[in-house]
Image (cartoon, rainbow, N blue to C red; front, side, top):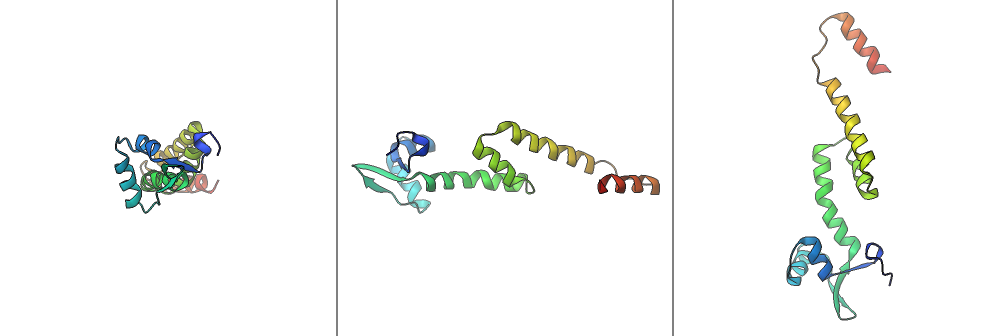
Length: 122
């Protein structure tokens, strides 16, 4: 088995306790049961699949991103997975620029409306 924690296929209940901020392994096992993640013994240690745990933990983030950024949530989640904070901020800044332009007062005159339409075409 590979020693690097992040690339291991399995996660021990003691490590899951750290992630869930609990001290009791029974709480981690119960959490897995609630999420329908199988816990089993491997070399006298209680483990489960790291991939399944990460999916369950990421579901919370994905739901939040979908709610707050429905158009760009996939890009933002990709930035999270790659730990690319600068790109994450760039995406949010671009979205904020678009939204600030869209939320300004609507043009009243025909010339102003034509001008806005020309800007939107480009």
